[in-house]
Image (cartoon, rainbow, N blue to C red):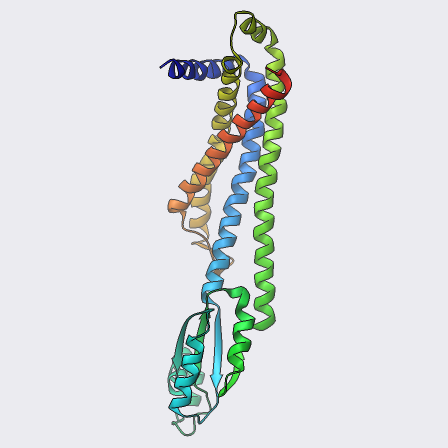
Length: 299
């Protein structure tokens, strides 16, 4: 009970201190708000890049063309070999007649050209459409399939896919690096701002020491105050996430530039990111205050 009373008193004192030292508190809140806005934007961007990459990887397909005139037994043999590759997630076999019918549906020009093709005159090839589990190993998987007897050609977008995967991985790393860097900057700013607050309250701290207050009793209000500042500083970023991302998503109909780049649906995404931003704000406020108290007051 004593601990709860002390915690309640610390929370009350923290809110009083925020308003009593309004100018310094405003500086801290402003720093936190600006930084958390950038952090929030970086988190939204990094999650969307990750989602876009996952969608691209999901749709990435190796197209395997088999030689014309091979027997059904040979096709079954190729099927078993493809199925036995550990990196293969799924596959679909399409006969050349099925491929022709699908192409006819896609274009009136194709339909006019292919309408007179029968089984014997159809120059298309039977194909396997193979999806992989790990896109980073797609080239090795394609090369392995290409070595199978009866396989004519294997295509998956070769160089373009490899470059795209590398680019997306780099973007993800940069986005996460920016988020971490901004959090560290926020902690640094809070430490320095809280330092000014503590310096202006040296007399108050001296009195607390003289009456026998413990280190814990002295430090707790400052730590709670940092948490309060972090919480208040996260209000604007959270509002921007909740309303800004929703408006952005609706304005672009859920796509960015083209239907290839699909944005993450707002719900529950915006609520998860909002909780993350609030948590970051409270955490960096607490860490900043604790560091300032421990390092500069030496209590």
